[in-house]
Image (cartoon, rainbow, N blue to C red; front, side, top):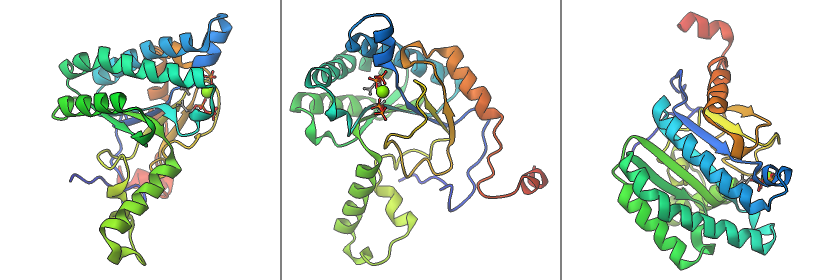
Length: 251
Ligand code: IPE
Ligand code: IPE
Ligand code: MG
């Protein structure tokens, strides 16, 4: 298994273009409301923004893109909205996977899939298998995902597989069991829609990620908006606990 430098155990390399971008795609409902349309129309338009973002990330040289599509708390929404979101997810898999594959995208889905219906689970497995050898971009969709769920399932799996670690285990023992073990920690986190919170997204992995919040609603998030986020990222000084002087001395 590939392993990546942990931001708390070492110093990850600094890149001009973020290697891993993680996005909370928020604001679909408000986008629709502003247009006197049903919320689902906002989600549909949001899918267009996903397409454009994937394309831009490939062009800009991003290696990992992780999108929060449905949180473990989103089941609290009205049943009609939840069921329409599931249908949209299936439709998107049906329509997009061939094109993603052509473009060299490896698709991964993380989250507690046990609550999804069998048809959706099978579609996810097939899409992951079909694209597993692709190397251009790893696109991860977080669906029924929660950061706390992820940490708990990782601890539980670790203890099941290595009961001898029950009393003492290290970051290196634990990290391989997280859902995103195949990706480096995100360099850049983007949340659209104006809220400034993590909403139980990647709690472990965001330890040293640069956070970027924008009022742009997700369906309006385009190439320009992505480039603005990247511009902001480029101006950050990623110190990982060190002083600015130390960074300059190393450069
Ligand atoms: C994000 O948009 C998409 C999902 C959570 C599925 P919202 O549906 O949360 O849109 P707002 O926040 O109500 O505008
Ligand atoms: C976060 O958005 C989850 C996704 C975008 C999938 P929410 O709209 O559910 O977050 P809160 O409820 O405003 O924190
Ligand atoms: Mg929202």
